[in-house]
Amino acid sequence: MTYSVAVSGASGYAGGEILRLLADHPDIEIRTVTAHSNAGQPLVDHQPHLRSLAHLTLQDTTPAILSGHDIVFLALPHGQSGQYTDALGDVPLVIDAGADHRLTSASAWDAFYGGGFHEPWTYGVPELLVGNGKQREQLRGATRIAAPGCNASTVSLSLAPGVAAGVIDPSDIVSVLAVGPSGAGKSLKTNLLGSEILGTANPYAVGGTHRHIPEIRQALAAASGADADSIRISFTPVLVPMSRGILATSTAPIVEGATDAQIRDAWQGAYGDETFVQLLPEGRFPRTADVLGANTALIGLAIDRAANRVTVVAAVDNLVKGTAGAAIQSMNIALGLPEARALSLNGVAP
Image (cartoon, rainbow, N blue to C red; front, side, top):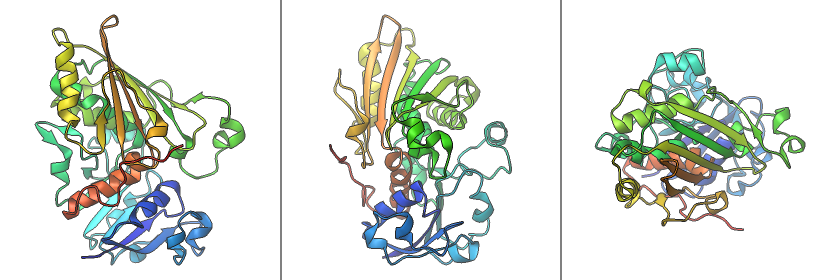
């Protein structure tokens, strides 16, 4: 069966990456691409690397244009998807790459986003531990999927095994992330100009203000069965001069009595049979260069007995495993297709 697809926000980074991956998917026909201010223009004027899609023209983003497809991807700024989702009831599968349907807590949405709160959808991180299973099971047959925040899923995948196994204390998590500016979207912003970011590193959303914090707390609470209020995290992203990628370094205290073997077994048990999330051998740590263009998360684990903390270093491509790849992997699961279809395990080097 071939599924017809519409992609909104197709002139942006997330929308372009969704299209790049879908273009090689044998079960997908990309029928419609939409935008707002760029509507009426050829797609390749904004995504010149998508040569196989040069025949497509950006249309207006309206419910009428998006309806009538088997699958709709919404790659819109946060707070904009909700105005369309209620009108897409006839679409069998809708996948939102924005934040509108990620959070289960209305109060958390009000505190970090504001505006209208929309019902939570099935979270699109298949490998994430949830109770005694994984989020993958919740995605089978899903009709509404919320793709993750790139920073949030990176940190959650980093720490969920230790939290679920009870070998780290989730009340004192510290995460510092080096992130590329593509995660901030394609709109023109002075602080994202090349002349502003080249040769420097810039922290932002410091002091517990980043919008991905409640998403991380929600995911780790689901992994442990605890209340989200018991998850405390100091989260600091740092903008660095690479176009894409996340390197997340997260630490948490070791629970009294947990042995080194138990700690490493927690991560090995969680990801030992996974394709796209891989624990590196002891003493090895990932680089962002190793995952560029891939739907792969590489994780390095260190046990710091002097500080009595576990350190986890994770690398992902924020536009692939962090966004578009997670969305398409979740789509494959929901449709009963091979999970890895159209997704690369291999990065691009040099």
